[in-house]
Structures are given as C-alpha cells and as structure tokens.
Image 1 (cartoon, rainbow, N blue to C red):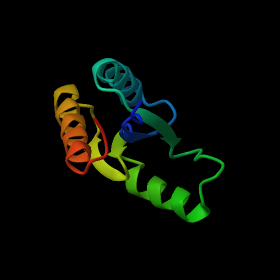
Image 2 (tube, rainbow, N blue to C red):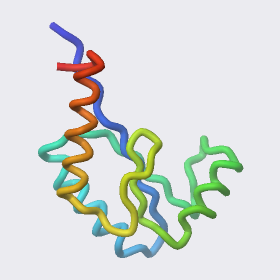
Image 3 (cartoon, rainbow, N blue to C red):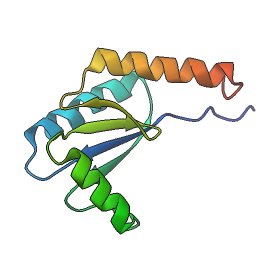
Image 4 (cartoon, rainbow, N blue to C red):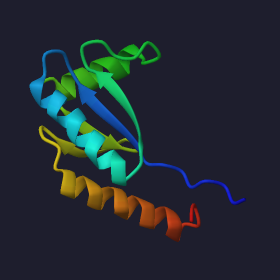
Length: 105
C-alpha cells in the first residue's frame, strides 16, 4: 500500500475573548470536511509550552491586533476573517504542488 500523502499543516493564531477567532474555527471545521488538514492553535497571550520566548514575543507583537491569523506551513495565508472559498483554493494548490513534487497520490 502506498504511503499516505502528507496533509497541509495550518496554524491558527488566536487569542482570548476573540469572537472572530470563534467564527474562524467554525469556518475551518467546515473546510476541513472536504479538504483535510492538520491544525494547531497558537494563543498569542498563552503560547504553547514548547515555544521559545523569542517566538512568543514575535507572534504576539506581530498579531496582537490582527487575530485570527492563519498560516499554512509557516506562511501567512489569511488574517482577520477566514475566506472559506479562498482557503479551499489555497489547499487545492498546496495539494497540486505536493503531487507535482511526487509527494502524494
């Protein structure tokens, strides 16, 4: 059986009491039904325990007034609001690029 192709890795930068972040999570859940991906959440006020102090400060400074912000493989792809149609296109392009590299399907 051939190995499974890798999934896109998304990171959602979020924060406390962020209603747009709640909407973003709901949009991402809908997109994920047809375009699988892995996701990690990064609260800019309480970064992951394994984050360096420099990374925590960097992302908080960069996004404190911009959340939610979505990264795909470390590259910002959307911020403030999730555009589901645009995200689907980004994920499809990502998948096509992986297939062209011989990384899947």
